[in-house]
Amino acid sequence: MSDYVIPDPEPKEIDEKLSIELRHLADNAVLKAKPQGDERCDNCLYYLENTAEISYCWHQKLRILVGGEWWCQWWEEIPE
Ligand code: SF4
Image (tube, helix red, strand yellow):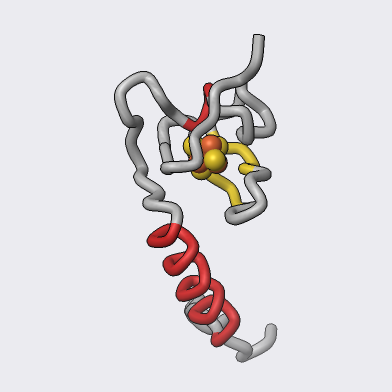
């Protein structure tokens, strides 16, 4: 049997970097983790899979995963 002890998980430098980048994106997008009235990510044009609880937002200024109940100022109605 080996004496190797699995180290506790901890964020790496890349995680800190991505966290800061995503924080800036969220701030610029006024991204909120709650809906704005009837406007929410899962009824927005840019939400890729509108039946999923979490999906990819393909708005050119975001391109990140967002929650279906979130909202940002770039919300756009899905055309009929
Ligand atoms: S553009 Fe904004 S409201 Fe629309 S899916 Fe992306 S984050 Fe949500």
